Image (cartoon, rainbow, N blue to C red; front, side, top):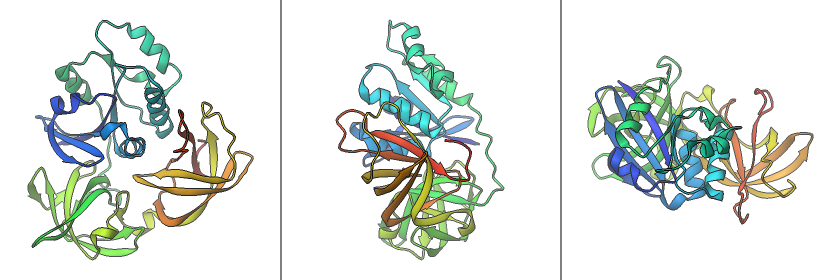
Amino acid sequence: MKSLNVGIFHDDGIGKELGKKGTVSDISFFNRKTDDVIFTFMQPVEDKLLAKAQIMSAIDAAIVSFREVSPGLGETILMLDSLGVSRGIIINPPYSDAGAVEGLVRNTILKEFPIVENDPGEIIQKLEEIETNRNNESPVSVVIDHSFNVKGLGEVLLGFVKSGTLRKHDKLTLLPAGKEIVVRSIQMHDKDFDEAPVGSRVGVAIKGASVEELKRGSVLCVPETHKTGKELKLKFEKNKFYSQEIEKGTFHLLVGMQTMPVNIEETTDGTITISTEQTFVYKEDDVFLFFDLNAKKMHLVGKGKMMNSPSV
């Protein structure tokens, strides 16, 4: 059965219409299972910027409401465009001209999103049509979004199988902590399974690491598929709507579901050199987003990619 992970932006009410409420922190989760698709819906609580960015890094598709055109909505569009979220749905306010929405997204990746009214049935139908083209045979990796300790069971993480197939008794590496862990059990929708295919949202009991090491954005993986570091040189593209010049200083970094303060050490000829105090985990094709949390309007500074990756 296909799994689809969907972000909801700028609509606080539709999540509970689309699924059953699950985990809530700075991100609210809603779950739904149809005959063909297992859905996980996520929305940021109070439109928190970093939670919104973390959701975008984990999803297959986005639902974006245009009920209120605001600077926050504009930044959401730019962030989705920067991260390459190419599938989703735009919700048009009742009695509004879809042409106005089309004009706002014309030069972004959202131009291909179908525009619908706020009808949960039609939204689910459109989402079911999305093809994911996943590869269950690639090396397994799981990105963590929550973790906790369960009495009698030990350390448990919640997260998404981003590639490959997760299996009970797998021995994997937790990055960036560098710990070897063993998968003790796997749950999906409160049922035990021996394996979970790519795209699945899972609860995993593990042995070999503490809850403090199972931070959001950490990854369970075959080690050679990911890298870790504290310093990196990236190709960089500035957000044209961010008015200030990019200079040395402290900003905020998103890579995968990790967020952390980052120092920009040098900017030259379309590149930036960055350093952090805490080790981060990344892949060769990851997009790095940079934010100015002190900005009054536009927080998205720009995006970076590895020097040997295709153009940003």
